Each structure stands twice: as C-alpha cells, then as structure tokens.
Amino acid sequence: MGTGVQSYISYRVITKTNLPEFEGAEKIVIRRYSDFEWLHDRLAEKYKGIFIPPLPEKNAVEKFRFSKEFIELRRQALDLFINRLASHPELKQSEDLRTFLQADEEKMDRARSFETGIFKKPGDFIQMFKSKVSDVVLGKEKPVEESTPEYEKLKHYIFELENHLAEAQKQAFRLVKRHRELGQSLADFGKAIKLLGACEGDSLEKVFSEVGSKSEMLSIKLQREADNLLFNFEEPLKDYVRAVQSIKATMLDRANAFRQHFDLDQERKYKELNLEKMKFMNPEKFSESETEFSELKAASEEATERYEHIVSVMNDELARFQEQKTADIGLAFHEFAKGQAKLAKDIADAWRSVLPKLEACSSS
Image (tube, rainbow, N blue to C red; front, side):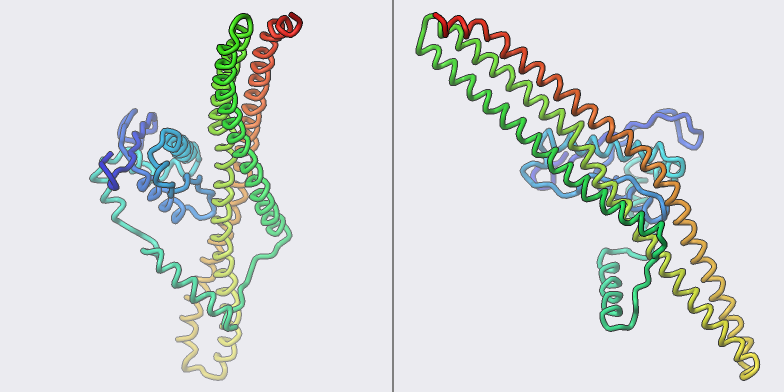
C-alpha cells in the first residue's frame, strides 16, 4: 500500500472462533507490522514469566523489502506468531489480543496511542541502564544474581541451545544457497549442451538435446527444493533462534525480579533490626518507623511473590517450549529428509534415462 518511500505492507488477519468473549464467529481486520509489534510488546509487559512468541526481524534491506520471497517469509512468521498466541492457555485470553483481532482501524489506533508501563521511550530504558552500569562500575552497587544449581543449569542449556540452533540455521542457509547455485549451473549447462548438439548435428544433436532438457528440468527441481528448504527447514530453525531470544528476555525479567526481591528483603532485615533497637532507644520515633517498616515489609513480600510467580510460570513455559520444539524441529528435519530423498531420486532417474542413448553414441 502507498507509493514510493511511504509504501508499506498490510496483512489481512482472519479470525474464526466460537469463544463467547469475541464479537462474532468470524472477523477480518487489516494490520501492519507495527500493529504486531504493539501486541508483542503489550503482552511482554503484562505477562512476566511467559515466553512471548517471537516476531520476525523488523529491518530489511530496502531492495528486498517488497520481494515476493521476503513478503511470504514475513507473512508466514507473523501467521505463526499470532496462532501461537491464540493457542496459548493464558495469552489467548488477553484483552490486547482480542483488540488486535477484532478492532477497526480507529479503535486500533486509539489502543496503540494509550501507552502503559514505566518506559514510554527507548531512551528512558537506555538512561536507566547507563545509571545502573555506572553504579556498578563506581562500586556503588554490586549486581546480585540468582545462582541455584537448577537455574545455572537452565542458563547453560539456553546459551548452548542458542549457539547450536544458530549454527544449524547458518548451515541450512548455505544449503539453500548451494541448491540455487547448482540449479542455475544446470540451467546454464543445459543451454550450452543444446547449442553444442545443434552444432554437431546428426545423432549427437538429438542425444545432447535430451541431456540439455534433463539438465534444465533438474534445474527447476533444484530451485523448487531450494524454496522448500528455505520455507520448511531454514525458516523453522531461524524461528527457534528467535524463540530463544524470547526466553532470554524472560530470564532478564526473572533476574530483575530476583534483584528487587533480594534488595528489599535485605533492607527489610536491616530495618527490622534497627526497629528493635529504636523501640528502646528512641520511643518517640518508633511509631513512625514502625509504619515505614510495615510498608517496606509489604513491598518486600510483593516483590518475593512476583519473583516466585515468574519462576513458577517459567517452569510451565519451559515444559511447553520443549514439547513444541521437539514437534516443530522434528517436522522440519522430516521435511528436509523427504525433500532430499525425492530430489536425489529425480536426479538419478533423469540421468539414468539418458544413459542408454549416451552409451549407444559412445560405442558407434
């Protein structure tokens, strides 16, 4: 939609449901990528501990931004994102998801303009991050990290998984590239061998023409298999690389919740000791300090509950993630093996079919 530098892609989102909280059985809305971003960020802000499904990358090289392949890859990734939300036991109940799936453009714009949370602008977060880093560097604050054996094991697994998935995706990308290069080479070879046959004439022309035709036919099959590898093998691996980033974002939320829980708990213990002393040494200020301590204790308990909630939710999410990953990656490798087996058979059948004619030429 639009023209020139103002051009953009819109997506038609079709929802079919029998859930009573929706406006009807079927709804069609038009959404842009930025609408999907809004939904992702809202859910990430509200549902701490849950692995929010990842979005495809925002930026694209300008000359590829409107290519058929890029648009389809992004559409496929957005489709996966929204269906994962719709199948999640908690996220599917989100009011923001319902807004995204059924609000008209005016309501959607109004919802997007209403921001909640601490960070209104990326700069706010950056500034806070800088101040925290400065505190650590200057020795004002020592970072506290959760270090239970179970959590250390989880962190190790996630970082190992990220590295291995990224390497597998990189090699899958190379496979796609090699299939396309070989396909192009066979197409060029097919044309060249046909011209050679036409130059020779007689029986060689017919045989070389058939060899050239087989090469061109196999070139098409290789290009198709390259597309199959891209959409059904490389892209699922890439999606899980992004999914690991979502898990790491949740781990950051957990780390922040742990620090807040730890800091408030330490402060509570310190104030509790001082309160006991003040009861005897400074009775006049005891009442005021007791009120402050009660507020601190309530905040500490709330922080502890928040941290424990994230830990509990993450445990459930990890089980769901492992189950889904096994199914999705298993399917991707099945599609890979099936495609490679078919391609190998097609290549063998094609060259086997011209062998008798080539043998007859070489013996005559």
